[in-house]
Length: 423
Image (tube, rainbow, N blue to C red; front, side, top):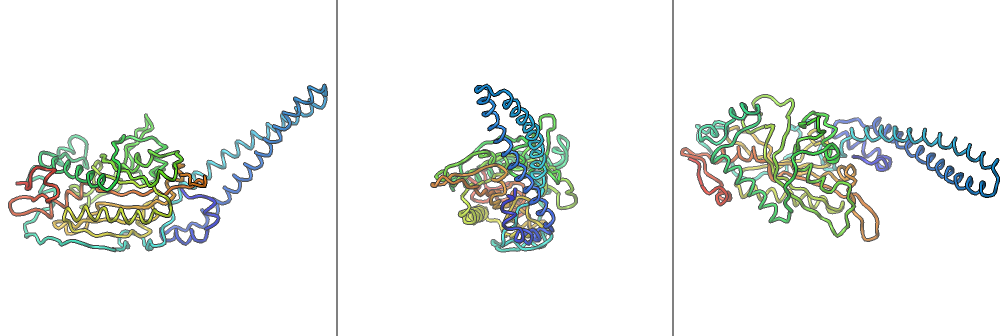
């Protein structure tokens, strides 16, 4: 969430930056500043009245002790009037503060200066590419046909149990899925990330803290009776571990990782792009989160990018990295790099990871700060990344490692699967 004092200090800069998101923010920012000024003025007036009321209360006690009943009665009347005024100002303060907060919740993060302008994913900027796209025979199959041929994933059975987008992994398909999870977690913990096992349901405060709420696009599964939400990513519970905390400078940086199933409604997703594992309502993902000081956050972002590169190199999958343009940038992100794996059978790139820096956007919502050696308090920067999302990684392995007589297993996964080929 943006901070009003920074909006005031950098208003024109923010207006220009939000144009990268195709947002004309001038009127919205003016309204924020007007509401913030009203809030501050109301708070000042209320503080003055409360101070005067406290002064009168002490004076009334003294007047009664002196036997000056008439003056005490006059002071009591003044005190009653002040209480009426303070009640009205308190109600106004609550209303203005609520209106300001609701408006701030609608404003996305300010894009980093390196974010290119653009309207959609067609305008994203490719900054890196590595790996050789395998030259498969003309008879190569897409992953959904391979999954059926080798009895690895049953999409129809998942549809029977739950509905479309809930696949059932079977036999060596389930084993390969488990191998990927274990391998990703091992890579993360070896790199210094502390592993957590987390709740899959979060409360409203957690959703607001990391920016999934308000859910303008309707992507979260909600349980209204209990006011809980199924997590769309482990980022939500991982980052909320530190909500409402004041850390010490020596505690930073903090690096966290977790495997969880993830749940997304994927409202509005139709067509060929959602076949098979391309877009699911339930899927597995291993996440990494970093909590750092502001001056270290972009260095940490680069470290996270290099970390994901290493994993994809070890899996020997052809991949590329995109810097997302303003029109494709997530609501909470200041800068995002997307990793994509090439699907040889589908002849297109599939997103398998996003690595993002949120700067103070989440920490301001979370009230997550640290205290430096001079006892000054600062908001931290939060970052997160997929390391990795499993469905499209699995799709890439099935399609790119297929042969005429089976599917090879990437060498780095063989100690986890216990087999080197699916036949």
